[in-house]
Amino acid sequence: MTTSKPIPEVVLIEGDGIGPEISEAVLYILEHAGARITWKKASAGLGAFEACGTALPEETIEAIRTTRVALKGPTTTPIGGGFRSINVQLRKELDLYANFRPIKSFPQLKTRYEDVDIVFIRENTEGLYSGLEHEIVPGVVTSLKVSTRVASLRIAEFAFSYAERAGRKKVTAIHKANIMKLSDGLALECYREIANQHPQIEYDERIIDATAMALVLDPSPFDVLVMENLYGDILSDLGAGLIGGLGLAPSGNFGQNCAVFEAVHGSAPDIAGMSVANPSALLLSSLELLEYLGQTNCAKRVSRALQKTFETKEICTADLGGTSGTMDFAKEVCKRLDE
Ligand code: NAI
Image (cartoon, rainbow, N blue to C red):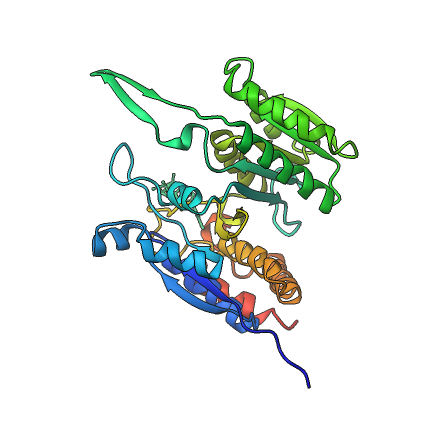
């Protein structure tokens, strides 16, 4: 007698802005590809805030604690006031300490560089995102950057273990320890300690500002980059620019017990509601999710269909130079699933 594996439950947060549009497209493609997932919809973002006064309801966090895995659309964070970022809250609540952001060229898309293949690994729980801001006196504000040994050691271990598993050659630590001698200095000490435990992986260190320039001039020497929260946020967007834009950059947030997959980009209010957003970044994040669930064949099939869609260039969203809508693009990917 054969017993088929139970269908995993995954929390889906559609988010706001372009979130619902790209989520619809991704679910459509995954359903056509035969992904074995039971979606449990949960709310977060502007809609949740308007409906129940909290942008990240406790039930949503509980749902992810139960399923241990989620796919999340982007959520808007008010600027200069208002509620705290849902992403920062979620990452802290679920201790999703590692943000994994692979940036890889699509040979079918013409960009300045053809062979970018860099993984940005960002510490997700501390640094300047700790939300410890104070007005000392009117006109004087401080924002505390938190750096701990525990967090720096575990993000370094995540980076080196990943590099080993994936057959990568080098881990580069990105820092500004020439100026932030204590906080970034502590992080560097921890990275070096872990590097010594992985002698088969080359290790080097670079200062953040010079790294930004070097990445733009020639991304080829870079392999796996590990860094604190803010540096990872900024440099990975730069990385997305190297391969054609934010519409192509996926990510996964990992903790000991949970994983939340989401695109690198935000809610793109400038194009929200127009059905023109590129769903590829969230789709690529969902492929990371399928791999995580052990549905590798399904992930590979969708990945091939996406590449064929890029190759033919008949249907392409505006960010990649086309005029197609989000769902037209999704339907085209589905058409190519069985080619
Ligand atoms: P953004 O990433 O939303 O947009 C930057 C630019 O990229 C815009 O011109 C947008 O139209 C374009 N873009 C982004 N995704 C695209 C896609 N899939 N297809 C085509 N074009 C795309 O960054 P922005 O405008 O700085 O942030 C908007 C909001 O999103 C803010 O409230 C921010 O806090 C939030 N945000 C949320 C994130 C998340 O939920 N993980 C991540 C980053 C920002």
